[in-house]
Length: 306
Image (cartoon, one colour):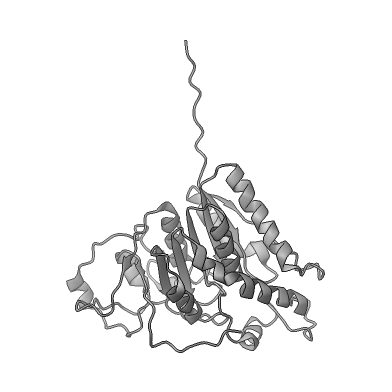
């Protein structure tokens, strides 16, 4: 008689890479809680210690992240990689080196074009200058490490061959949404998608305003259930899209779980208010249509790389 032992299926693993600031891994707490309830295993960790003023070697930050990826690869896990802000740059590097199923970048800090503006917007919660003695602030040496990460590793995204999805808020007060568009234009990987969240701010993963919209998009992307379509603005058939409102103002607040539904016809779309020429993902469009990649515009203002 043969005994057959049950096979234990490992959950898909989401590894998160946080941004620059004192919240470190806790930036991911709301998203991690949501994804775990949706059947994923989630690894969150801090790759630097904001309380340790000597922890300013950006290479050590990268090595700590690599250690997590190696552990997951050794365990033969199915890995989904997510990076937020500076973590988006780090995640891009990791995805260029380690085998992952897909990569999701939330407000990636590829081009922090106006560093003084970033400091002012953060008000000590994200980064600071050396003269700022606010105990909540990051030191000037830690801030230099942030700049080193961005300048040395942002080009790694061009070497990523897995699917890439960028999410960026159009009201991002820290990293302009044009930063993502600028990098998106340079990526030759055909499996790339860029979605703008109308009026969303930098911290949309945990500020409470856009979680009900962003989280289902992330979940469905990692499940492979989102099949974005290339939107051609030069096409003769232009489907007008409504201007999005913050998710918390929607009724119901949570978007449909089936983001790839195509129930809404073009005729019904045509009756909606005409959207601005700039192609952006709207809340209603994401609820009723398949998520669309947003092409880059040649008319955008050019930013200066700093």
